[in-house]
Image 1 (spheres, helix red, strand yellow):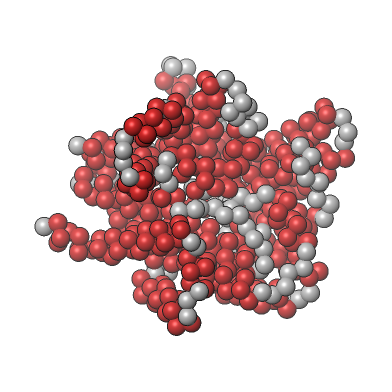
Image 2: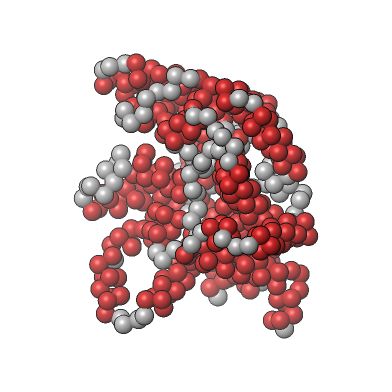
Length: 72
Length: 404
């Protein structure tokens, strides 16, 4: 029942994205992610860029959603 | 033109190429024209308001610097800051206060059939809350002689209108910004790379994470009485991350775009949900540029922590209430600020007791950190309900159903 709810309608994706965010922040807390990335070989760096760009294209919302803080 | 649109990405790419192609002396005019054009895409009338506020702050600063007498300086500061803040008050709060006052009069049995205070129906110009704060900080800094008044009108106008930060900050201080646009920028490959990386991550946080979470949050919060308790709880957790990704995504795009142009803006977020206390969250990690603005231009002038304890608590509460109201003309934001203020006061009151308790309980440091992070996150989570709900009654419904 719970599993059905989680996998339905993108909740699982939402949870995975939050997990990704928290992981990046925990890694960043000790040493900036960009510094760590700069120390990596070329294929790792470009692998990360392509993954992010791929994520933007496949999962991104491109209907020009306004930013929350622009209303303030 | 939103930062998360293809038109902005195209505009920015063209601008960045032109920026590095022209000599230093043409760069500030290029950035200024680009910034005004960018703002004009929302509404040309906004540009007029922006220039009017800029002119007032520019002449205010020059006037304060040119006058010797304390009384004269103070009068000039008061007039120019009141004009700048007055624009914000009129556009953002006038109708809210008019409606609230009429409602209060009606409750007291004093109201007539027609409202006593006419409504102006002004539309809040996007970014006004942010650039008016930049102008006020500049005026106060000139008044306090921390900063010479800027003579170059073009540089000053660029400080106020610089497009990456215009719509939603970071609320930059004048000195670091002006000193950067004065000196020639050389193209730096590592700087541009870092700027692109930060922009990419910011864009990802906004269009992938925040916008995906928003659909759940919007659905549950639209009609809380018809949403299940489980949906409301899930939506509130999602909103915490939606808001963070939305706003820090914007800030990252602003900081990254600026970095590509060789200009460093201040940090606005520092992993806020890893805060180990509410004061850690507010003082060092969430919307840092606004928190510092309130600290330097409201809290410290009120006496800050150099007053009696009771006054200090009052100051903290007042700052949080005003900061709540800054977010929007709605009682939900006032309560949101008030609850955060209460947290802060309670943490000040219990500081010693908590330190003693922490010493008495033998818990390994990592466990303590994780516990603090989880507790802090949930304290903040409760306040987000007020931040997101359409009305106070909605917020109470959501909290009641989530608790039951």
